[in-house]
Image 1 (cartoon, rainbow, N blue to C red):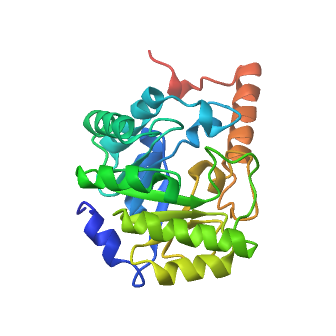
Image 2: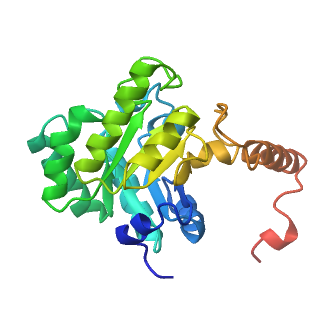
Length: 259
């Protein structure tokens, strides 16, 4: 499999939908890598894997360990590291942490949440040779409530300005989270880089979901998630059958015993 690079992602805008998923482990990375253009090691792992209340609680070092594993087993996809809360509050801090992340994990790019407020930081990182993916609309690291954005003219104008700013900063793509369809369409047509939607309609150049959500494992199913499987149900049934076999002394079977 040929390794996907940023140039290929850029060329897919308006041509071929960009497929993205999150991954946090060897098993998910290996499978997602077969089909995805981009794998995001998202700070959503705070809630998905560790049961934290928000993404703000996850530490940089914890995410780096997960990303190193994902990068090791994702041979084809572009691997993006989601910079955690308060790890890029200044140019100096952002550069220090981003270089640390890329050196340790060997990831292909980093992701930053924010618009005009992080323009200088994003531009600085790009100037230093660090590829940046943007993230606008709903910003989980700073939002008080998780809700749809872009419903009124003030929000529309602000989010569009954020998209233009991050694009001008040199980002190679932007995640649009929980953005109304007509605004997602306007942004996608306005900026020259790909838009990746999560709850932002198929008007975007690509789509991303949290892998545990779409596999039916997390128990979190907002409107924008399609549950493609019911892994939680499968696990429940499998464990129930295992417990039954152990209780009835049926397991281990003869084929599971060494003689």
